[in-house]
Amino acid sequence: MPNPYFEDCRGPIAGLRLPYYVWRALEKQNIMTIHQLNAAANQIERSVPGIGTRAAKAIRAELARVAASKKAV
Image (tube, rainbow, N blue to C red; front, side):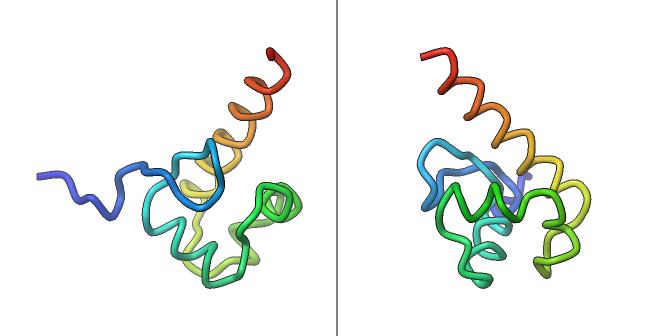
């Protein structure tokens, strides 16, 4: 049975879908905007407790997806 804690969901940053535990880790570090997340993305697995390599890759992929969709508009 899938664990909803690890399933992608919407969070406080519009357009991004990340696992619930990632949203919680970002919230604890007061990362609440796409600009803050972009600024932290390159070293996020080192600077945010609870974010590992897999979550960091997911964050970067979501940021790239959103950036690409904004360029297409």
